[in-house]
Image 1 (cartoon, rainbow, N blue to C red):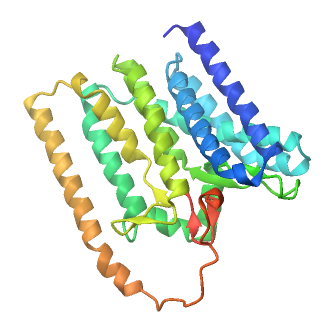
Image 2 (image 1 turned 180 degrees about the horizontal axis):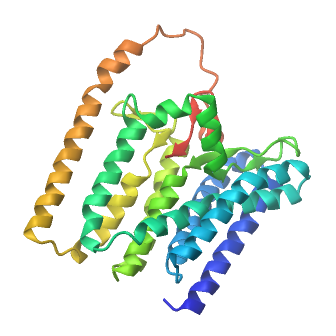
Image 3 (image 1 turned 180 degrees about the vertical axis):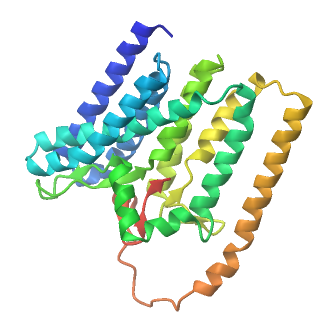
Length: 326
């Protein structure tokens, strides 16, 4: 992809993202259209960052330039909230849009730095399998670190400060100055490893465009599950917080499956990693039922205040927890 053409598309993507981020905080929609607006917001605020990350991965990065942008992004993440609280809308909305960019930019640069350490495209197979397994154990295991982190105020606040937000459309019936809320949050690790995969696809001349298309589609659908089915569970697993590296790794491996040409030793290594990871996941979830039984409390006979229609499913932080891809 040509450097000039990439720069134009990346600039257009960033501009569209900033404009939409400001509009999402400044405009409101009729209450009966909240459900539709939430779907549109989900698609746009997942599609644009995915496209931006893939386009950014094609730039002529050096370790020095990636490190500089990484440092600048982290600095903005720390400083922009102070500026945002000191001004009124719409300027505060513009600052928040820049904050959103910074929350994506710094992990992307870190991911590119990690990508420079991968010397062979065949290593992407065991890496993707391991990362997906690690994320599943962190997020979905009964005693996973992510679940524990979300329950502690300090680490929860750190996650809130670093996580990219999908904005919740505001209804016309809400007060104009009400603080904007989110549909869902996406942790920095997802941007980091998405950038790493994108960088490696370019570096090893793999199926970049096909992966981009499928990645944007799959992650948008995945985020819709988190947002609109977050109060439900599947096989006992809550859907309000799902591991983001699982669909990422699956898309990269499936779309590029014909690109891998493994030696006998590499095949044994990959199968070994896959078997160990499968056993780890199986062991973790065999413990889920006893752990859940031990923590079970008597049911509350009072009706739950959090049961709502699809149009009201657009709140990410509710009484039953946060909507997140971690």
